[in-house]
Image (tube, rainbow, N blue to C red; front, side, top):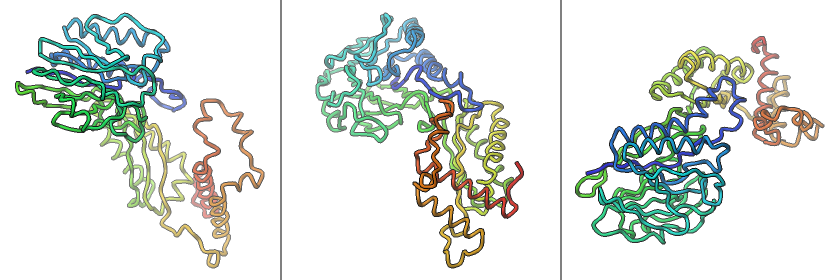
Length: 419
């Protein structure tokens, strides 16, 4: 019986551009997250006394901006060497052979599979054969697994492959393959990489994506880590997920349809944040809140958007004592009133204003038609703000108009809070 670790998509020192523009963001802790997650991986390997570690591609996030990135990996590989644990890895699309211009001499316990052709290495101490091939270029579109050798009889065979599988949303279609094709090789385990969501494709043989070891943004939510695999004397795999992440990303939908006051909404948000923080188990929590639901408070929320958002941020700071960061708060509620006003019954001033805004929302070019060209003002904004204000986006213009409508109607009806 022996154990090994299957990890992938480390993306060491992945750049998090524009992070400084987010007020209150724990910038350095997030920047260091991939390094710390790698350290957690190495510590787990030593603690579990695994026979070897596999990394199925994308150790790096492209060519290093500085040598400290490569040095950090070498330091961690040396810790494995000192514990007599070999490390086997392949290059994925982010660290393809033609993309990397820097390199460092690797410790003798590290085996980096070549990109010219699939080949095999054996680990006689546990009678394991590992087959793999690195990416030579960023965009490998052929099925690399077809050229992998057949299983070596009498050994526990592992295929190390960076692939999109049969295709996954949000991931480039690199080195596509089929489950049936992988099974034909006769391997006992396929260690896949490239897809950042943990997924088991087959249990006999075991074919799996472990996901990345550290979420990098709000599209990579939930626990992130590696697979700890125990192989019994009958070559059966017993697989356990092990979290390694130090920053946990979450997106929470907050339904406020039952709220009758702004205090109710703040209380609901507080409860959601507290639950997510407890689930993060001591990690930094990076969270996006989507406030939704059909509510009578819709116009009030939009009219007082900034004060409400600041109140929620204050709650998050209190809940996590600085370990909860709200990356974004989006108010996506809807009014309980009929939104499509009928001109025949809406002849008062408020109805006319609502109809004007409705017409503006249905006419994306109206601002330009009225001579309200925002491009000159946009050019004068600081560079770090330009990415956050997509002035050419119809959705952005609609959100601005909706907030303006709520503010104006609130002023006219006496419900707008003083600023």
